[in-house]
Image (cartoon, rainbow, N blue to C red; front, side, top):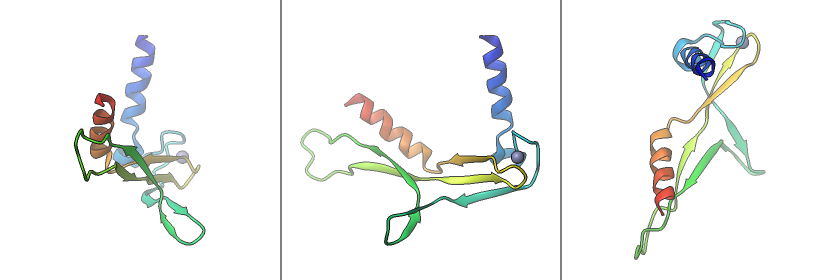
Length: 101
Ligand SMILES: [Zn+2]
């Protein structure tokens, strides 16, 4: 149990976004903040993820979901890639609301 905790802290301290160091090969050749594209047969758009929001009781118009776009940090030596969602706080808030419904 303690071993798992120590490994988890070590992994978090080697966050590519914060340190610009690859956690797999220790390279500093990091490509930051890359747009991850999606293609829907007619256009390109940033790849996104969505958390549905519950409909408030009695609501006529409501925002049905919260959306975040994926951003990537890519190692230029080994290709290891980490994905981040800048809208994480809004997604977490939507997730918590969905769990209360
Ligand atoms: Zn690497």
